[in-house]
Length: 462
Image (cartoon, rainbow, N blue to C red; front, side, top):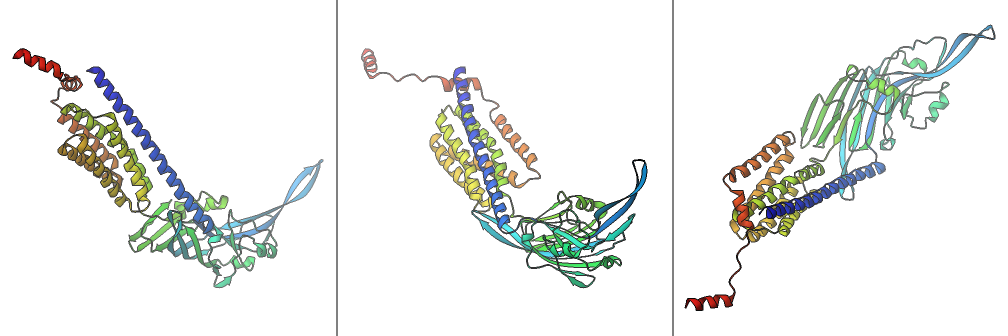
Protein backbone atom coordinates (compact mmCIF):
# COMPACT_ATOMS: atom_id res chain seq x y z
CA UNK A 1 0.00 0.00 0.00
CA UNK A 2 2.72 2.43 1.00
CA UNK A 3 4.81 1.53 -2.04
CA UNK A 4 1.86 2.20 -4.36
CA UNK A 5 1.15 5.56 -2.71
CA UNK A 6 4.80 6.65 -2.87
CA UNK A 7 5.09 5.52 -6.49
CA UNK A 8 1.94 7.39 -7.46
CA UNK A 9 2.97 10.59 -5.73
CA UNK A 10 6.44 10.36 -7.29
CA UNK A 11 4.91 9.97 -10.75
CA UNK A 12 2.61 12.97 -10.21
CA UNK A 13 5.55 15.02 -8.92
CA UNK A 14 7.69 14.12 -11.93
CA UNK A 15 4.87 15.02 -14.33
CA UNK A 16 4.31 18.29 -12.50
CA UNK A 17 8.01 19.10 -12.91
CA UNK A 18 7.78 18.40 -16.65
CA UNK A 19 4.79 20.73 -16.95
CA UNK A 20 6.57 23.45 -14.97
CA UNK A 21 9.57 23.20 -17.31
CA UNK A 22 7.19 23.63 -20.24
CA UNK A 23 5.68 26.70 -18.54
CA UNK A 24 9.18 28.08 -18.04
CA UNK A 25 9.82 27.71 -21.78
CA UNK A 26 6.57 29.52 -22.56
CA UNK A 27 7.63 32.33 -20.23
CA UNK A 28 10.93 32.55 -22.12
CA UNK A 29 8.98 32.81 -25.38
CA UNK A 30 7.01 35.72 -23.95
CA UNK A 31 10.25 37.50 -23.10
CA UNK A 32 11.57 36.96 -26.62
CA UNK A 33 8.35 38.36 -28.13
CA UNK A 34 8.72 41.42 -25.93
CA UNK A 35 12.25 41.82 -27.25
CA UNK A 36 10.97 41.55 -30.82
CA UNK A 37 8.49 44.34 -30.12
CA UNK A 38 11.25 46.51 -28.66
CA UNK A 39 13.35 45.85 -31.76
CA UNK A 40 10.40 46.88 -33.94
CA UNK A 41 10.12 50.14 -32.00
CA UNK A 42 13.84 50.78 -32.40
CA UNK A 43 13.63 50.03 -36.12
CA UNK A 44 10.82 52.55 -36.57
CA UNK A 45 12.74 55.10 -34.51
CA UNK A 46 15.91 54.62 -36.58
CA UNK A 47 14.07 55.28 -39.84
CA UNK A 48 11.48 57.83 -38.66
CA UNK A 49 12.69 59.61 -35.52
CA UNK A 50 13.43 58.33 -32.03
CA UNK A 51 11.82 59.33 -28.78
CA UNK A 52 12.20 63.08 -28.37
CA UNK A 53 13.29 65.26 -25.48
CA UNK A 54 12.93 69.03 -25.74
CA UNK A 55 15.29 71.19 -23.68
CA UNK A 56 15.34 74.98 -23.61
CA UNK A 57 15.72 77.57 -24.91
CA UNK A 58 18.45 79.10 -22.75
CA UNK A 59 20.46 82.27 -23.23
CA UNK A 60 24.20 81.71 -23.69
CA UNK A 61 26.61 84.66 -23.46
CA UNK A 62 30.12 83.64 -24.54
CA UNK A 63 32.96 85.73 -23.20
CA UNK A 64 36.74 86.00 -23.13
CA UNK A 65 38.17 87.01 -19.78
CA UNK A 66 41.73 88.27 -19.31
CA UNK A 67 42.95 88.09 -15.72
CA UNK A 68 46.19 89.65 -14.50
CA UNK A 69 48.01 87.74 -11.79
CA UNK A 70 51.17 88.57 -9.83
CA UNK A 71 53.74 85.78 -9.85
CA UNK A 72 57.28 85.55 -8.50
CA UNK A 73 59.66 83.80 -10.89
CA UNK A 74 63.38 83.53 -10.10
CA UNK A 75 62.91 85.99 -7.25
CA UNK A 76 61.41 88.59 -9.59
CA UNK A 77 57.80 89.70 -9.32
CA UNK A 78 56.01 89.58 -12.65
CA UNK A 79 52.51 90.32 -13.87
CA UNK A 80 51.12 87.38 -15.85
CA UNK A 81 47.94 87.50 -17.87
CA UNK A 82 45.68 84.45 -18.10
CA UNK A 83 42.90 84.16 -20.69
CA UNK A 84 39.68 82.26 -20.00
CA UNK A 85 37.09 81.49 -22.66
CA UNK A 86 33.74 80.39 -21.33
CA UNK A 87 30.01 81.09 -21.52
CA UNK A 88 27.43 82.42 -19.09
CA UNK A 89 24.08 80.58 -19.25
CA UNK A 90 20.78 82.16 -18.22
CA UNK A 91 17.54 80.21 -17.90
CA UNK A 92 14.06 81.58 -18.67
CA UNK A 93 12.12 83.25 -15.89
CA UNK A 94 8.95 82.06 -17.62
CA UNK A 95 8.63 79.12 -20.00
CA UNK A 96 5.40 78.05 -21.68
CA UNK A 97 5.04 75.10 -24.04
CA UNK A 98 1.74 74.51 -25.81
CA UNK A 99 1.14 72.00 -28.54
CA UNK A 100 -0.62 68.98 -29.95
CA UNK A 101 0.75 65.50 -30.55
CA UNK A 102 -0.71 64.27 -33.83
CA UNK A 103 -0.52 60.46 -33.66
CA UNK A 104 -0.30 57.79 -36.33
CA UNK A 105 0.83 54.16 -36.57
CA UNK A 106 3.82 52.68 -38.36
CA UNK A 107 3.92 48.95 -38.95
CA UNK A 108 7.05 46.85 -38.63
CA UNK A 109 6.44 43.17 -39.21
CA UNK A 110 3.77 42.02 -36.78
CA UNK A 111 3.79 45.18 -34.65
CA UNK A 112 2.14 48.58 -34.97
CA UNK A 113 4.24 51.31 -33.37
CA UNK A 114 2.64 54.67 -32.49
CA UNK A 115 4.48 57.75 -33.75
CA UNK A 116 3.57 61.42 -33.53
CA UNK A 117 4.21 64.86 -34.93
CA UNK A 118 4.32 67.50 -32.21
CA UNK A 119 3.14 70.88 -33.42
CA UNK A 120 4.16 73.18 -30.61
CA UNK A 121 4.82 76.76 -29.61
CA UNK A 122 7.45 77.66 -27.02
CA UNK A 123 7.22 81.11 -25.51
CA UNK A 124 8.82 82.81 -22.54
CA UNK A 125 10.90 85.60 -21.10
CA UNK A 126 14.58 85.85 -20.22
CA UNK A 127 16.24 88.39 -17.94
CA UNK A 128 19.96 88.62 -18.63
CA UNK A 129 21.92 90.42 -15.93
CA UNK A 130 25.50 91.25 -16.87
CA UNK A 131 27.89 88.62 -15.51
CA UNK A 132 30.06 89.96 -12.68
CA UNK A 133 33.53 89.06 -13.86
CA UNK A 134 36.93 90.41 -12.85
CA UNK A 135 39.55 91.62 -15.25
CA UNK A 136 39.17 92.58 -18.87
CA UNK A 137 36.09 90.93 -20.37
CA UNK A 138 35.12 90.76 -24.03
CA UNK A 139 31.64 89.47 -24.77
CA UNK A 140 30.80 87.62 -27.95
CA UNK A 141 27.44 87.50 -29.68
CA UNK A 142 24.84 85.91 -27.36
CA UNK A 143 22.49 83.24 -28.65
CA UNK A 144 19.52 81.14 -27.63
CA UNK A 145 20.38 77.44 -27.35
CA UNK A 146 17.97 74.54 -27.22
CA UNK A 147 18.05 70.83 -27.91
CA UNK A 148 15.99 68.03 -29.39
CA UNK A 149 17.12 64.43 -29.03
CA UNK A 150 16.84 63.51 -32.70
CA UNK A 151 17.18 66.41 -35.12
CA UNK A 152 15.88 64.21 -37.95
CA UNK A 153 12.44 64.70 -36.43
CA UNK A 154 12.41 68.45 -37.13
CA UNK A 155 9.73 69.04 -39.75
CA UNK A 156 10.41 72.06 -41.94
CA UNK A 157 12.36 74.92 -40.36
CA UNK A 158 11.48 76.26 -36.92
CA UNK A 159 10.50 79.93 -36.83
CA UNK A 160 11.92 82.01 -33.98
CA UNK A 161 11.09 85.54 -32.91
CA UNK A 162 13.12 87.45 -30.34
CA UNK A 163 11.56 90.71 -29.10
CA UNK A 164 9.31 90.60 -32.15
CA UNK A 165 12.12 90.13 -34.68
CA UNK A 166 12.36 86.96 -36.75
CA UNK A 167 15.78 85.29 -36.52
CA UNK A 168 17.15 82.20 -38.26
CA UNK A 169 17.90 78.90 -36.50
CA UNK A 170 21.30 77.27 -36.87
CA UNK A 171 21.68 73.52 -36.72
CA UNK A 172 24.44 71.19 -35.56
CA UNK A 173 27.05 72.68 -37.95
CA UNK A 174 26.87 76.14 -36.36
CA UNK A 175 28.99 77.50 -39.23
CA UNK A 176 27.46 80.96 -39.28
CA UNK A 177 27.64 81.39 -35.50
CA UNK A 178 31.29 80.38 -35.36
CA UNK A 179 32.24 82.63 -38.26
CA UNK A 180 30.34 85.71 -37.03
CA UNK A 181 31.22 85.38 -33.37
CA UNK A 182 34.60 86.83 -32.29
CA UNK A 183 34.50 84.68 -29.16
CA UNK A 184 34.25 80.90 -29.43
CA UNK A 185 30.70 79.97 -28.34
CA UNK A 186 30.93 77.34 -25.60
CA UNK A 187 27.35 76.12 -25.47
CA UNK A 188 25.21 74.63 -22.74
CA UNK A 189 25.70 70.88 -22.58
CA UNK A 190 24.24 68.94 -25.49
CA UNK A 191 22.43 71.74 -27.34
CA UNK A 192 22.12 71.26 -31.09
CA UNK A 193 19.91 74.21 -32.17
CA UNK A 194 20.90 77.85 -31.69
CA UNK A 195 19.62 81.30 -32.60
CA UNK A 196 22.28 84.02 -32.87
CA UNK A 197 21.28 87.42 -31.47
CA UNK A 198 22.37 90.59 -33.30
CA UNK A 199 24.67 92.09 -30.61
CA UNK A 200 25.76 91.73 -26.99
CA UNK A 201 23.54 94.70 -26.13
CA UNK A 202 20.44 92.84 -27.36
CA UNK A 203 20.04 91.12 -24.01
CA UNK A 204 20.29 94.11 -21.69
CA UNK A 205 16.57 94.86 -21.58
CA UNK A 206 15.54 91.23 -21.40
CA UNK A 207 14.28 88.90 -24.10
CA UNK A 208 10.82 87.77 -25.07
CA UNK A 209 11.04 84.75 -27.34
CA UNK A 210 8.68 82.63 -29.37
CA UNK A 211 9.54 79.37 -31.15
CA UNK A 212 7.19 77.51 -33.49
CA UNK A 213 8.41 73.94 -33.86
CA UNK A 214 7.09 70.85 -35.62
CA UNK A 215 8.83 67.77 -34.22
CA UNK A 216 8.28 64.12 -35.16
CA UNK A 217 9.09 61.27 -32.81
CA UNK A 218 8.30 57.71 -31.79
CA UNK A 219 5.94 56.94 -28.90
CA UNK A 220 7.33 59.29 -26.25
CA UNK A 221 7.85 63.03 -25.84
CA UNK A 222 9.71 64.60 -22.91
CA UNK A 223 9.91 68.29 -22.00
CA UNK A 224 12.49 69.55 -19.52
CA UNK A 225 11.31 72.38 -17.21
CA UNK A 226 14.36 74.67 -17.39
CA UNK A 227 12.47 77.86 -16.52
CA UNK A 228 11.95 79.43 -13.13
CA UNK A 229 8.22 79.06 -13.80
CA UNK A 230 7.10 76.40 -16.28
CA UNK A 231 3.67 75.85 -17.78
CA UNK A 232 3.07 73.02 -20.27
CA UNK A 233 -0.20 72.29 -22.09
CA UNK A 234 -0.21 69.20 -24.32
CA UNK A 235 -3.14 67.65 -26.15
CA UNK A 236 -3.72 64.83 -28.60
CA UNK A 237 -6.41 62.71 -30.22
CA UNK A 238 -4.73 59.59 -28.77
CA UNK A 239 -6.98 58.08 -26.12
CA UNK A 240 -4.45 56.01 -24.16
CA UNK A 241 -1.59 58.21 -22.92
CA UNK A 242 0.91 57.32 -20.22
CA UNK A 243 2.12 60.23 -18.10
CA UNK A 244 5.47 59.50 -16.51
CA UNK A 245 8.75 61.26 -15.79
CA UNK A 246 9.32 63.20 -12.59
CA UNK A 247 6.06 65.19 -12.78
CA UNK A 248 2.46 64.11 -13.30
CA UNK A 249 -0.04 66.56 -14.80
CA UNK A 250 -1.70 68.99 -12.48
CA UNK A 251 -4.84 68.69 -14.59
CA UNK A 252 -5.74 66.09 -17.16
CA UNK A 253 -8.76 65.05 -19.18
CA UNK A 254 -8.71 61.66 -20.91
CA UNK A 255 -11.43 60.18 -23.11
CA UNK A 256 -11.78 58.02 -26.17
CA UNK A 257 -11.49 61.21 -28.24
CA UNK A 258 -8.06 62.08 -26.82
CA UNK A 259 -6.46 63.87 -23.89
CA UNK A 260 -5.55 67.30 -22.59
CA UNK A 261 -2.94 67.71 -19.86
CA UNK A 262 -1.46 70.71 -18.03
CA UNK A 263 1.60 71.06 -15.84
CA UNK A 264 2.73 73.94 -13.58
CA UNK A 265 6.27 73.40 -12.34
CA UNK A 266 8.49 75.72 -10.33
CA UNK A 267 12.28 75.63 -10.40
CA UNK A 268 12.05 75.07 -6.64
CA UNK A 269 10.64 71.61 -7.36
CA UNK A 270 13.28 70.49 -9.83
CA UNK A 271 17.04 70.46 -10.42
CA UNK A 272 16.62 70.69 -14.19
CA UNK A 273 18.60 73.93 -14.48
CA UNK A 274 21.64 72.54 -12.67
CA UNK A 275 21.37 69.25 -14.55
CA UNK A 276 21.12 70.97 -17.94
CA UNK A 277 24.19 73.09 -17.27
CA UNK A 278 26.36 70.02 -16.70
CA UNK A 279 24.88 67.11 -18.66
CA UNK A 280 22.70 66.23 -21.61
CA UNK A 281 21.28 63.12 -19.90
CA UNK A 282 19.52 62.25 -16.66
CA UNK A 283 17.32 65.34 -16.64
CA UNK A 284 14.10 65.91 -14.73
CA UNK A 285 11.35 65.96 -17.33
CA UNK A 286 7.67 65.72 -18.10
CA UNK A 287 6.95 62.58 -20.14
CA UNK A 288 3.98 61.73 -22.38
CA UNK A 289 3.93 58.30 -24.05
CA UNK A 290 1.41 57.01 -26.58
CA UNK A 291 0.61 53.52 -25.31
CA UNK A 292 -1.57 50.85 -26.89
CA UNK A 293 -3.87 49.85 -24.07
CA UNK A 294 -3.26 46.76 -21.98
CA UNK A 295 0.18 45.25 -22.47
CA UNK A 296 -0.70 41.73 -23.60
CA UNK A 297 2.83 40.46 -23.02
CA UNK A 298 2.87 41.58 -19.39
CA UNK A 299 -0.54 40.02 -18.78
CA UNK A 300 0.52 36.80 -20.49
CA UNK A 301 3.64 36.71 -18.35
CA UNK A 302 1.56 37.16 -15.23
CA UNK A 303 -0.83 34.43 -16.37
CA UNK A 304 2.05 31.98 -16.75
CA UNK A 305 3.01 32.70 -13.14
CA UNK A 306 -0.36 31.27 -12.16
CA UNK A 307 0.27 28.15 -14.27
CA UNK A 308 1.40 26.20 -11.19
CA UNK A 309 -2.06 26.82 -9.73
CA UNK A 310 -3.70 25.16 -12.75
CA UNK A 311 -1.40 22.16 -12.40
CA UNK A 312 -1.98 21.94 -8.63
CA UNK A 313 -5.77 22.07 -8.91
CA UNK A 314 -6.02 19.64 -11.84
CA UNK A 315 -3.52 17.02 -10.68
CA UNK A 316 -4.69 17.32 -7.07
CA UNK A 317 -8.28 16.88 -8.19
CA UNK A 318 -7.35 13.80 -10.20
CA UNK A 319 -5.53 12.25 -7.27
CA UNK A 320 -8.44 12.88 -4.91
CA UNK A 321 -10.81 11.44 -7.47
CA UNK A 322 -8.68 8.30 -7.73
CA UNK A 323 -8.82 7.78 -3.98
CA UNK A 324 -12.46 8.73 -3.53
CA UNK A 325 -13.91 6.76 -6.46
CA UNK A 326 -11.37 3.91 -6.54
CA UNK A 327 -10.59 4.60 -10.20
CA UNK A 328 -7.05 4.55 -11.53
CA UNK A 329 -5.92 7.36 -13.84
CA UNK A 330 -2.82 6.55 -15.86
CA UNK A 331 0.21 8.90 -15.72
CA UNK A 332 -0.05 9.34 -19.49
CA UNK A 333 -3.51 10.78 -18.97
CA UNK A 334 -2.08 13.16 -16.35
CA UNK A 335 0.57 14.19 -18.89
CA UNK A 336 -1.92 14.84 -21.69
CA UNK A 337 -4.08 17.01 -19.45
CA UNK A 338 -1.00 18.91 -18.24
CA UNK A 339 0.11 19.45 -21.84
CA UNK A 340 -3.29 20.93 -22.68
CA UNK A 341 -3.01 23.27 -19.71
CA UNK A 342 0.40 24.43 -20.95
CA UNK A 343 -0.75 24.95 -24.53
CA UNK A 344 -3.42 27.31 -23.16
CA UNK A 345 -0.72 29.89 -22.36
CA UNK A 346 0.85 29.45 -25.79
CA UNK A 347 -2.54 30.02 -27.41
CA UNK A 348 -3.10 33.06 -25.23
CA UNK A 349 0.23 34.57 -26.25
CA UNK A 350 -0.21 33.98 -29.98
CA UNK A 351 -3.84 35.14 -30.09
CA UNK A 352 -3.13 38.30 -28.07
CA UNK A 353 -0.79 39.49 -30.84
CA UNK A 354 -3.75 39.64 -33.23
CA UNK A 355 -6.82 40.41 -31.10
CA UNK A 356 -7.39 42.17 -27.78
CA UNK A 357 -6.22 40.32 -24.68
CA UNK A 358 -9.77 39.77 -23.40
CA UNK A 359 -10.88 38.04 -26.61
CA UNK A 360 -7.64 36.06 -26.74
CA UNK A 361 -8.19 34.81 -23.18
CA UNK A 362 -11.81 33.89 -23.94
CA UNK A 363 -10.93 31.95 -27.10
CA UNK A 364 -8.03 30.09 -25.47
CA UNK A 365 -10.16 29.25 -22.43
CA UNK A 366 -13.10 27.92 -24.49
CA UNK A 367 -10.75 25.81 -26.62
CA UNK A 368 -8.82 24.24 -23.73
CA UNK A 369 -11.77 23.75 -21.38
CA UNK A 370 -13.82 22.24 -24.21
CA UNK A 371 -11.11 19.72 -25.14
CA UNK A 372 -10.37 18.85 -21.51
CA UNK A 373 -14.04 18.35 -20.67
CA UNK A 374 -14.57 16.07 -23.69
CA UNK A 375 -11.45 14.09 -22.79
CA UNK A 376 -12.28 13.78 -19.09
CA UNK A 377 -15.78 12.46 -19.78
CA UNK A 378 -14.10 9.47 -21.42
CA UNK A 379 -11.24 9.16 -18.91
CA UNK A 380 -13.51 9.29 -15.85
CA UNK A 381 -16.20 7.20 -17.56
CA UNK A 382 -18.89 9.63 -16.47
CA UNK A 383 -20.41 12.67 -18.10
CA UNK A 384 -21.22 14.10 -14.68
CA UNK A 385 -17.64 13.84 -13.43
CA UNK A 386 -16.18 15.12 -16.70
CA UNK A 387 -18.51 18.11 -16.82
CA UNK A 388 -17.83 18.81 -13.14
CA UNK A 389 -14.08 18.93 -13.73
CA UNK A 390 -14.64 21.12 -16.79
CA UNK A 391 -16.79 23.53 -14.76
CA UNK A 392 -14.13 23.76 -12.06
CA UNK A 393 -11.46 24.56 -14.67
CA UNK A 394 -13.70 27.16 -16.34
CA UNK A 395 -14.28 28.83 -12.97
CA UNK A 396 -10.54 28.77 -12.30
CA UNK A 397 -9.77 30.38 -15.67
CA UNK A 398 -12.37 33.08 -14.95
CA UNK A 399 -10.88 33.74 -11.52
CA UNK A 400 -7.37 34.02 -12.97
CA UNK A 401 -8.60 36.53 -15.54
CA UNK A 402 -10.03 38.60 -12.72
CA UNK A 403 -6.62 38.54 -11.06
CA UNK A 404 -4.89 39.65 -14.25
CA UNK A 405 -7.06 42.69 -14.90
CA UNK A 406 -7.12 43.79 -11.24
CA UNK A 407 -3.54 44.89 -10.66
CA UNK A 408 -4.24 46.75 -7.42
CA UNK A 409 -5.96 43.78 -5.75
CA UNK A 410 -4.14 40.91 -7.48
CA UNK A 411 -2.26 39.74 -4.37
CA UNK A 412 -5.37 39.86 -2.17
CA UNK A 413 -7.58 38.07 -4.69
CA UNK A 414 -4.89 35.47 -5.40
CA UNK A 415 -4.44 34.73 -1.71
CA UNK A 416 -8.20 34.42 -1.19
CA UNK A 417 -8.50 32.12 -4.22
CA UNK A 418 -5.71 29.83 -3.06
CA UNK A 419 -7.10 29.72 0.47
CA UNK A 420 -10.57 28.93 -0.88
CA UNK A 421 -9.29 26.02 -2.99
CA UNK A 422 -7.41 24.52 -0.05
CA UNK A 423 -10.41 25.03 2.23
CA UNK A 424 -12.75 23.28 -0.21
CA UNK A 425 -10.36 20.33 -0.52
CA UNK A 426 -10.02 20.02 3.26
CA UNK A 427 -13.73 20.34 3.99
CA UNK A 428 -14.71 17.96 1.19
CA UNK A 429 -12.32 15.23 2.37
CA UNK A 430 -12.52 15.71 6.14
CA UNK A 431 -14.26 12.33 6.72
CA UNK A 432 -12.22 10.29 4.22
CA UNK A 433 -10.17 7.39 5.62
CA UNK A 434 -7.12 7.80 3.38
CA UNK A 435 -5.41 4.61 4.54
CA UNK A 436 -8.48 2.54 3.74
CA UNK A 437 -9.03 4.29 0.39
CA UNK A 438 -5.42 3.74 -0.58
CA UNK A 439 -5.54 0.11 0.48
CA UNK A 440 -8.72 -0.51 -1.50
CA UNK A 441 -7.30 1.16 -4.62
CA UNK A 442 -3.92 -0.59 -4.45
CA UNK A 443 -5.31 -4.06 -3.68
CA UNK A 444 -4.92 -6.52 -6.53
CA UNK A 445 -8.27 -7.83 -7.80
CA UNK A 446 -8.77 -11.61 -7.66
CA UNK A 447 -8.25 -13.34 -11.04
CA UNK A 448 -11.36 -14.76 -12.71
CA UNK A 449 -11.82 -18.60 -12.40
CA UNK A 450 -10.35 -20.75 -15.15
CA UNK A 451 -13.06 -22.37 -17.35
CA UNK A 452 -11.86 -25.94 -16.67
CA UNK A 453 -11.65 -25.35 -12.94
CA UNK A 454 -15.13 -23.87 -13.00
CA UNK A 455 -16.52 -26.92 -14.89
CA UNK A 456 -14.87 -29.33 -12.47
CA UNK A 457 -16.31 -27.46 -9.56
CA UNK A 458 -19.78 -27.70 -11.06
CA UNK A 459 -19.34 -31.49 -11.57
CA UNK A 460 -18.36 -32.03 -7.97
CA UNK A 461 -21.37 -30.07 -6.84
CA UNK A 462 -23.56 -32.25 -9.05
